[in-house]
Image (cartoon, rainbow, N blue to C red; front, side):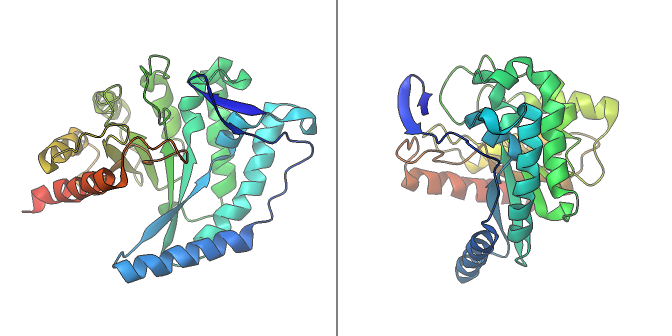
Length: 279
């Protein structure tokens, strides 16, 4: 099955012919251990390893005849991916990041189940929570994403409607986009929500303050200003706000939008901007 991006064929996906069974625990654990060893050599105290959410697989792979419907497929994926999540977290000093663009991007892709996106979204949140229910929440991040591609993003879901669902995630940290121009104002919506509903007690927010779709290199001052859009919200607390990137710098191999040399400069600005308040 061919998958296209902006009208161009990019890669082929396999059709699902039978129930999915995850068998990669030992490979996931080895990858985590190898990454930890590399990080230690580079002086990093802690790292995270990314893994698919159940719902993002359902974005790109239709269930076919192997499953009764979308929900059956979704929760079977949740059960199987829980094995990978456990394997990653079994390595001390490694956190898990569940990449879940299905929680926002899916609305814009035209997949069948997302035509009633807001109604289906709670099931995708539930599928993640089912997969991590016996795992330590403080070691788990969930990244929601509007799609790491350059476009108008006029069809992105209403943040007022999806934010309450994000807060139901049983993870320790939510990683969200607030750097790109379309969503730079989302902290305004967060401020309104927190004023009315409060902030979940044990939840951290890793704000994307680096735009990974633009070659413009942010200054440390720009990064700091973006962080303060959240830091200055009464009821969150500085200990719950982290800085990050909107998404990865190269989601698809060969579709690089930001060269590595520029990406490193943007990350340097991120680190320096986060430290400005300490100087």
